[in-house]
Length: 274
Image (cartoon, rainbow, N blue to C red):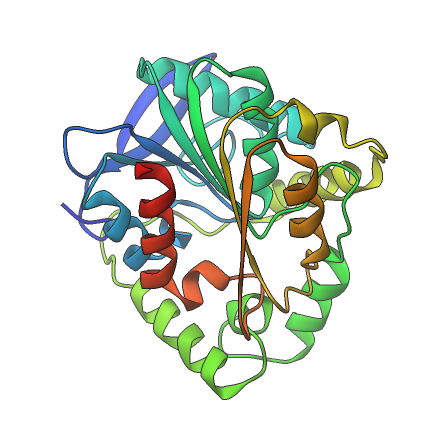
């Protein structure tokens, strides 16, 4: 099965009916994917998810209030992390890896500090640490003002022709699923999630205490020209974490993993399998 065709499943936990999809081989440590601001299961790049699923089980899901998952979207990273933890525990998996993109990367950091025995390794992409630098609202406003055919082109990719071409290819892949697609997120998702991100970055952590609590090996991937969460965030995480590796992709914005899907999958495999 592929991300474009695998069926949607549901599991009840903590008063929430979580929607999720799983694919990949039957053996190996499963990797659970944590999604970006306003994103749902269909916002993932099939080239990334399918590539990862060639060598391990992969699980994508909608957190509380997103897409076809019930409940209310929280307005704090901590509560979103708690909801994600509820979902992961319900699956009954003894050990997992986490891959968090953007907002999902913030959740991954919190989950790593709370589940040292269950979470083996984490991949953090295009995210910020607690107290990190963010320009969410200004970047989103600027992207909408450009009148692009798809808002993800100015949000996730740089203005260069190479990056924009990669963006168009990503969007074509992301639209391949024709049946059982998630509904687009509205204000009930974007409002609380924006508040959560802004408050997360506003809470200063001068000593990087949270990052220093993360014991798991961590791969940090970032776009060289990410305007939403500048790459200084990636360097700050790399410096503070006990066991981190850092990769910056050239001429890339917030969606660096979607611009270089094959390279990203190769880097993830090397890290997760090592």
